[in-house]
Length: 127
Image (tube, rainbow, N blue to C red; front, top):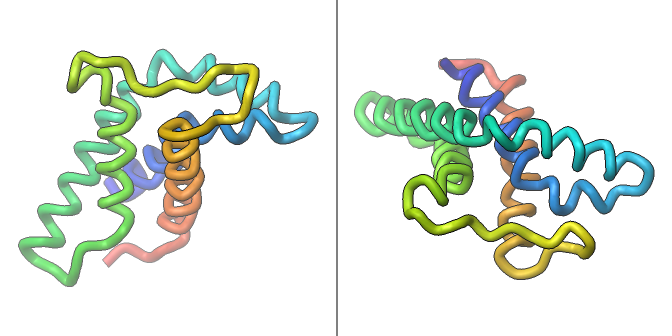
């Protein structure tokens, strides 16, 4: 279950951070195309992140030892990826030709943070 949370943080973070990642010289276009191929399953990643993050939040609130940042980031990723399905409004999306600004930049930076948290979770012992 912890592996699902970590993978959802990494993949969901990548899908959110693609606005910044596409600005990387030489590989930005490839990363953007990869994210475009993964965008149709973003809602599945969002559900996995929301469910696993919520599960671990409840477990750690009830039995301890404390709430960890892994589950908080997972819940945030789930909400960000499922925003248009939960509210009926479209999520903020940046234009492809320029760098992200405003809410787009905030989501992209949160995506980068989520990728780092997911990688950290892969190397953190459970329990």
